[in-house]
Image 1: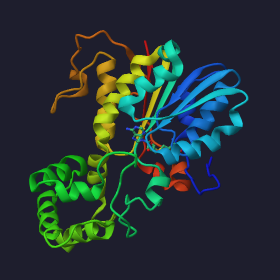
Image 2: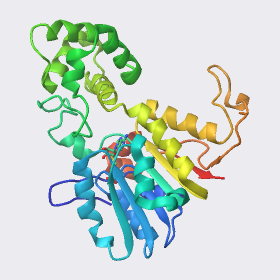
Image 3: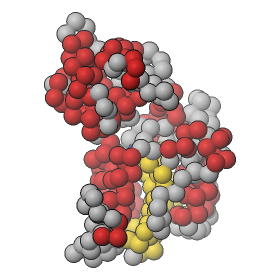
Image 4: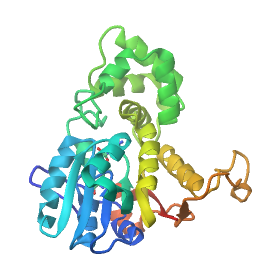
Length: 324
Ligand SMILES: C[S@@+](CC[C@H](N)C(=O)[O-])C[C@H]1O[C@@H](n2cnc3c(N)ncnc32)[C@H](O)[C@@H]1O
């Protein structure tokens, strides 16, 4: 299924049939899409809870909220659609304000993490493929831009960001090159950041399957949007607000995100993640009472046919759980 609106907000919702099956929504249910984006998953959720259901569709990007509003207008007669501009961390307050005590009875919650095609393809500095202002904020109403971060961070901070959020082998050399280059001119465009990376990494070490600046752009984006901290906060809120039997479905696109999701679900199921070097069989029971039953023993991946038609789905990893 492809979503597209008049302003070109196109996005192919990833693993949509797997998501809908696992969410197991019915007419009259109350569901929350924490990452409405172009509204593809939300439209499918609205169809399932119709008639008489409620769908809360959230995003930190006001453009996404606008596009999703147009996309979801067709359901307004049969579904109570609520569009909320908020990030994961403030979603509890937004959900409670919008649903009142009903917020504690969510039947399903979906997270489709990362950036949308619209954000990647738009002139917002997410991509090294075009020369654009280096912004990278998902929510342009607040926070510092990627250009601000690259200008203000110390060499050590840049190194840590590149190592931890990009898993970049050349983090040290790239951080040094950024600091060297910004002494002559502010790095305010995507092309300048990409060129700094190209200059820092020896040509012989450039990856064959992706642009040499891919990991740097990922790292800076994650730092600018504080993505990993938000994921943990959002999952906690969703797990808390699901009713017993309600389902949580999360799609992530890179290992850092997936690790947080995996660990949160394991902890919710009363199992601590296995310490490094120990087999999963050695997982330690936690003291907390289990609140989740994990539905996906291993993360699900997109089918070969979906990967062929939507290359973005290639790196998708889906995990799901049911509230006990
Ligand atoms: C991959 S897209 C979602 C696409 C959507 N499922 C669809 O069908 O079009 C991810 C969306 O999540 C939003 N997002 C990412 N992190 C967020 C956060 N911490 N809080 C709120 N929204 C977030 C992004 O702005 C983006 O629009």
